[in-house]
Image (cartoon, rainbow, N blue to C red; front, side):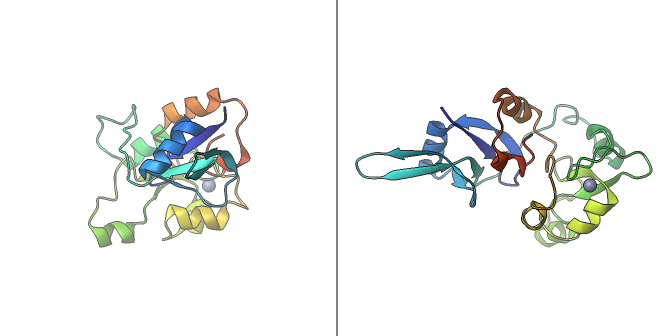
Length: 182
Ligand SMILES: [Zn+2]
């Protein structure tokens, strides 16, 4: 039985479900197919054909608190500690001098829609190079621009459970890797 990677609305990793379960989520409209991804399965009934890609994405955002940060007040230092001073985008090991904190949703967008930019969910440890490349673009724009150049690591750090589920799968499809599943 093939499996399908489920992304949060912000492209964070949520977990892995069976292709059949993914077909139901697609039919319910709770997830949308990621384009340009290979098919995991095709289901046929008398009236419909459901094509299930290897990656689907939630229409609405699910809040997934990180166990290490659930109760702590946000701080740049806390973000760097949580991410182990590893750039969330390219995976390079940084230190207290070279590590910066990047806003996943760019700050100008947060200012525009009135959301708080400095939250555990919206910030990751980043190297200066990735931060400059991402600039004021959204994660989606950044990923689509650089997924060919980059062997991107986790775009979102709040998914230890998803990561365990992914590892459990053994062979990881190439289409999952661009979303940080490795
Ligand atoms: Zn980087």
